[in-house]
Image (tube, rainbow over all chains, first blue to last red; front, side, top):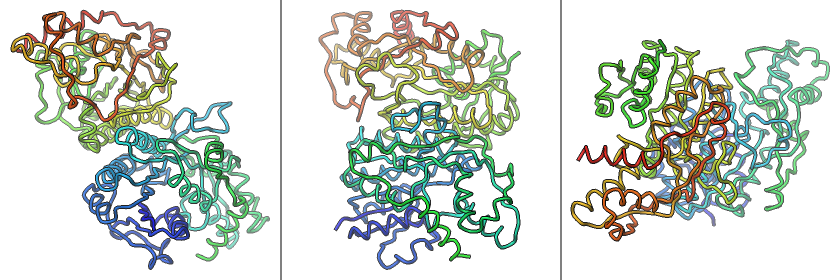
Amino acid sequence: MKKVLITGISGFVGSHLAEYCLSKNAKVFGLIRHRSNLKNVAHLRDQIEFHEGDVEDIASMYLAMDAIKPDIVFHLAAQSYVPYSWTATAKTMSTNVGGTVNVLEAIRRSAPKAAVLVIGSSEEYGLVKEGEWPIKETNPLRPLSPYGVSKVAEDMLGYQYNRSYGLNIIVSRAFNHTGPRRGKEFVIPSFIKRVLVANEKRSKIAVGNLDAIRDFTDVRDIVRAYWLLVTKGTPGEVYNICSGRGHTMKDVLYRIINYIDPSLNNKIVIDKRYLRPSDVPVLIGSHDKITDELGWYPEIPFNTTLKDTIKWMKGKQ
Amino acid sequence: MKKVLITGISGFVGSHLAEYCLSKNAKVFGLIRHRSNLKNVAHLRDQIEFHEGDVEDIASMYLAMDAIKPDIVFHLAAQSYVPYSWTATAKTMSTNVGGTVNVLEAIRRSAPKAAVLVIGSSEEYGLVKEGEWPIKETNPLRPLSPYGVSKVAEDMLGYQYNRSYGLNIIVSRAFNHTGPRRGKEFVIPSFIKRVLVANEKRSKIAVGNLDAIRDFTDVRDIVRAYWLLVTKGTPGEVYNICSGRGHTMKDVLYRIINYIDPSLNNKIVIDKRYLRPSDVPVLIGSHDKITDELGWYPEIPFNTTLKDTIKWMKGKQ
């Protein structure tokens, strides 16, 4: 029985990944902070062994890694909300960059044979020039947000710890992903929430830049890829995870409106407060590498993801 | 009279840069920490206005930037010794990545029009594959040391703060540089010291990997390039600074032995303690971009650099 440690288990992706690992008969350990909100994993409480610790505290990482001695580590813990990275840039760096150093140092000391997934991001690519779509892993990195910079550093730490110490580290660069339990501050749940409110109150739907093009994958497809990467990926390598298809945010919004109440499509207003200091105009990825090497491809249609997310958000109201 | 702030002014490069800025009739401000060793700038003490602060402390950066309101900032302060980055990885990240965030945030608040040089490094390139020499700025980044990872992050922060906030930031990637006042822990002064000791005591000269190939530039050529970059470079762009020529460390060692006492060349022994967990086999850069755009090229011959460094080290014994 494989011992799997998930840092950031109480998050959106962490909860789906925990479910997937349990379905693979793994023994799941979760790193949580004191007072972490555990609602995302409440239904799995009896099946997960929780350990308290903070990735920014190396001593707590040593304690957790010594106690668990995991075979697999998914290092999901991060400040993962892009807009907050402009407000709290130093904190984003200390959690994401410093935290990853601590997790990798603890693995190096206490579980040097563990297979480790370091979570990069499509935000690392940032500015993409004409002719660079779909984005391959070899594309230049030109991050446009502090979050993107922090993920470049995590990605490079994964590479460097593999090269320096032979650690069994694989790096993922997932493009946008969504689904049930996604935080309401993220774009799709945030759109859904505003449309649900507008439906109830017949109010306006305020949005930011609707021209941005993004490549969305269902979180359940993402966690399946994560499992495949740590069990069969090549250490020291980086893999995109994406659908390979781009949607404008306008298209996404109209699909949501269409599912909830098509008559709301004249309620949209642009609100500058939703604009970012710098934004990535187009992010469409290529998943050729993970498809060719490991046979992964996205299985859940985008409409299913949207409908499941709407259903989940309605249930929460 | 331009107001120039140099973080890390008490370091090797900082001291040479301060001299160069003074020769350009700039008013020079230096950021130093409480108890910084000021021997490198002792001869300039009357010409520099020192401010105490620590790049890891944002409040001290706000204070310094408010007091100085610089026209130009050279952000040199860093944990710059590659081998120490394996020992103190988290500290290297907090000083280099977190410190750069704080410096840029303070500039954004108090000196948003300043021209800023962010110091990347050839260590960002790390693993260089066959056919990738000489290394251009577009080469993939595959850092092999935590220091290299930290410099990738600094480099990307420079890019991202330019894109997000329109700050006037230029990024340099200098290859190896040396000259008088270089710390004795760095390779060339360290070689010189061991050869001087061997010359005196007829003892062995213990060294690490002599096959590594490096591209050395005189620090005085480097600081001239730094000045050119902040005054004439294109914001948001990155520039290599290098000689374009590679020397094996063996060649460097033999040149030093030859200047001190040629009969010592049979005293060399390989000592594993000097080997790094992962090392860059070949680093040879291309300076085409800075030469084509700004007319910079290295002027000081390598032998002059070595002789001046030997002379300086002999004077210190």
